[in-house]
Length: 312
Image 1 (spheres, one colour):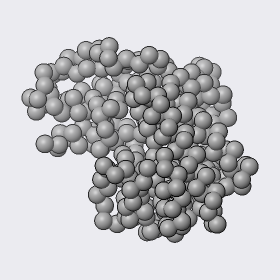
Image 2 (cartoon, helix red, strand yellow; image 1 turned 90 degrees about the vertical axis):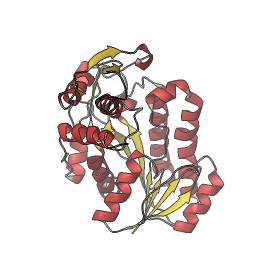
Image 3 (cartoon, helix red, strand yellow; image 1 turned 30 degrees about the vertical axis):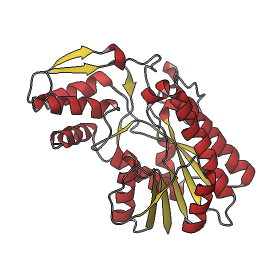
Image 4 (cartoon, one colour; image 1 turned 120 degrees about the horizontal axis):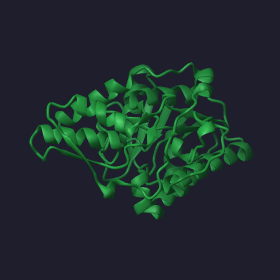
C-alpha cells in the first residue's frame, strides 16, 4: 500500500508517519512547504503548496497513492481571527485543489479529510456529548472553514463517487506541539519558569472553557483505522469522549512543577468568541473501528511538560 500524507511536517504528520512506518509497513510519502523540514529517513518527502493545483495534480500522478491523509491546514483558532483570508485560502481552496486533483486521476485513492470538533460551535447543553448528525454552529473563522471543507467533501463523495471519509477531530495534544496551543503553551511556560528563564507567573486566557483532549498518538491510530474501515461519505468524531476544563489542565501541569507559580489572566489570550463546552460522542467511531483511547490525559500532559523541560 502507498500512503500520501499532505501536510506531513506538522504536529500530527510526524506522529502519523511514525505510526504507519512502525505498525503498517506501507510505503509513505509526505508533503511539506519549502521552508519546512521532515526529519524521517523512512519517508519520501516532496515540497508542495496545495494552493498550486497543477503541482498537486503532478505529484498525485507521480506517486499514485492508495490512501491520502489530508492534514495540510491553517489549524490555529487564534491565528484564524488574525488572518481569516489565509485560513480560507488554505482550508477551503487548498482542499478543493486536492479533491479536484484526485478527481482527474485515472485511479481513485481513499481520502481522509481532517476536520475539527470546532465545527459544532455553540453546542446546547442538551446536545452534549455531540454526535456527528448534530447541527453545526461554527463560532470562529477556523471552524467555518473546516465546516465548509466537510460539506465540500460530502458533495464530492456523492456527486463524483469519490472515496472520501471525513473526520471531526477534537483537541489533540502531546509532545512537540507548537506553543500556540493551550496545553503546550502552559507546559512551555512552566518549563521556562523552572529553568529561571522567566518570572514565576503563568499567563492564561479563559480557564472555564471545557474541551475534549486526546493524545496525538491515539489520534493517528484512529486516522489509520478510519482510512481503511470508514464508510465513504461519512463523518466520524475523533476524540476522548470526555471534556475537561482548561483550569483542570492547568492544575495538573502545576501539580508536576517544582516551582510555586502564580496564575494571571492575559487579556491578549482571550478570544473574541469562545464556545463554553465541546465534548465528543465517539460511539460511531467505536462501532466502525473498535478504536479506544489508550493514553490517559495525565500521561499526555506529563510527557508534554517533560518535552519542554528537555528543550535547551
